Length: 113
Image 1 (spheres, rainbow, N blue to C red):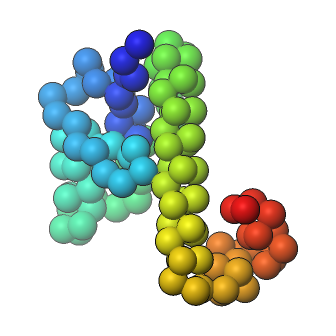
Image 2 (cartoon, rainbow, N blue to C red; image 1 turned 90 degrees about the vertical axis):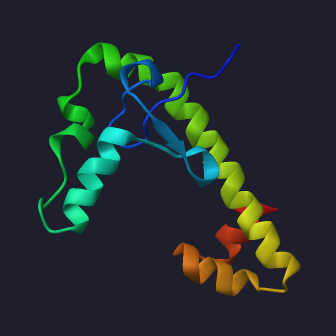
């Protein structure tokens, strides 16, 4: 079964938007959210749009997003695992990795080995 894509920012499903761009680790952004981000970057808007707040989304959207958001989280965890493994092949210590993750060395080691 094909994975349903959605915007990682506003939660709209792929059939609700015109364009969807993919980023690293399964994160995607729709053309509408790109426009909002551009406005924020140019100082034309401030703060986070209500479009990004799941508390304002209809129940149907939230339910439809459970499976795809969970799949995105899984892909991003795999992406993080790859980053940590790459750092370890470059002889970066568990202590340094842990510091950047904001966890203890032991926690980092247990999580990624």
